[in-house]
Length: 337
Image (cartoon, rainbow, N blue to C red; front, top):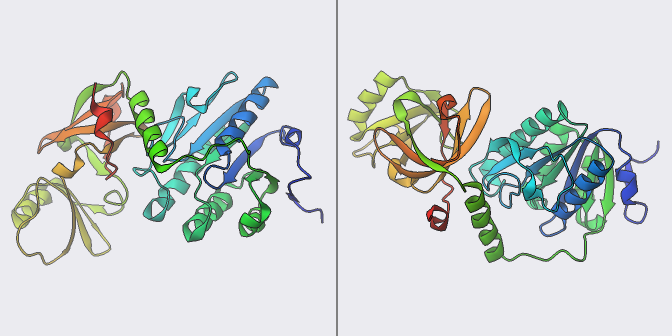
């Protein structure tokens, strides 16, 4: 049987453009040129009149949507930067890294965006994060590939770096290996942080303040909420008396009580308690979710017992049914006018 793996030296870029339709997953370590490679493919396909979708699957160095999210866009013309693409759909992660507890929200988010894109475009290109090594990297990539089943997986770098991932990917997909671009500049931690601030500031340009009220909302946001059994409103009043502070939301999950509280609970508790206070929400990123998924995101300015004041550009606030909380603090510079 003919091998589905094409290694460096046997590859040429023209071979990628012959794919009639399908999903192309771009993988590589940090600073291997994944975004540059994605940009090349986008422009090459568009120049041939192909209908292309791009899934930005890097919540840390996001180009299409804001950091802390995954996003999908449909470029209609050749572009110079992926940030020129407008997001048409997003998935909320609430972290700038897909590692650890945020791995499964990331995998599911990519799957949702790819599924949406497949129904609307002939070519779907996934620009991934640089998490490819170690236990988390291997599990993340293996899970993406086995769930999404991309038609083509492109690795950027040396074969020896990805040998186990290449073997895994070849079970489901055609695999190609290209060298990393020698012109790619390595980014320092400070440069990556500055880029996140710039992307947040750009995304929230033209935003406005809006208040959402707790009594009309459900609360979610992995890993705190959205996975347990919610308490009814009347039970929250009883729980508030027991814990000595106003409880705005509570869920029971795996023997643990998860609460959104007005302040620090007081006294001794007979239950395992995991709580998040309103004060800790200040300057965090939140997701605004409607019936059909994430509508947009917001930045928390303040929160009290009545509701939460956010900075957002969402024009469909009347459709928001759930607020997805996170501990992702956005730099204060983003809040300055």
